[in-house]
Length: 225
Ligand SMILES: [Fe+2]
Ligand SMILES: [Fe+2]
Image (tube, rainbow, N blue to C red; front, side, top):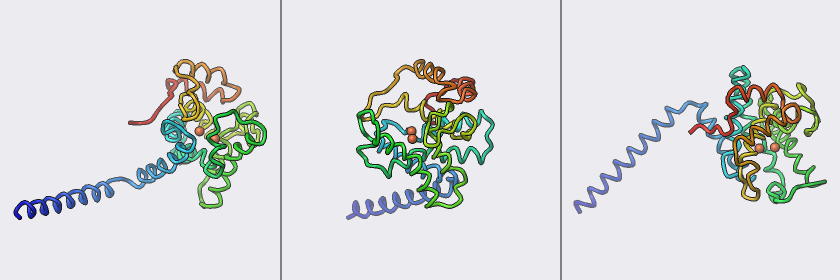
């Protein structure tokens, strides 16, 4: 009976301490950090759908932010950059699962359908949430290329907003080093990724941005531990 009473007291005490811990943590965590964690949660659903072995969207967001800071973006621009990078592929949630995770190289109609994820992401967010600033537009243009051979609008050079050019670079860098559950890693050596980015400078990537990326040490994976 004594032990049962002791256990009951212990349970009450532990529950009370747990309540205090979570209550204090909730109060201590700034709204911005809570928002960031929520975004990470949503982004990780897309990463899972795409078969990534890591937090690809979060990695792009953090990598984009590092490049954005080096480019002198202000706080508001960095927030939009972060949100767009986190949600860049959210339109894929609206596409058939076997298309998004296809292990064969897509062509023709299937490829065109997959490419609509840029438009679906933009339109869906615009329809659901007001006042998202330029975030949906950046999502629309995250696959545009410096040489005009990207999609969906074949924008060229500085027609593409700087933030979308940053996301495109960060996305490619992260994807080159990623393993997906249906596809092998493209490059296992860091120096091969750096060489490929340099090779594509002025074609897929903004050459000035590539210089900035090199100037900050060619970061490849930037998840803050
Ligand atoms: Fe994409
Ligand atoms: Fe991506």
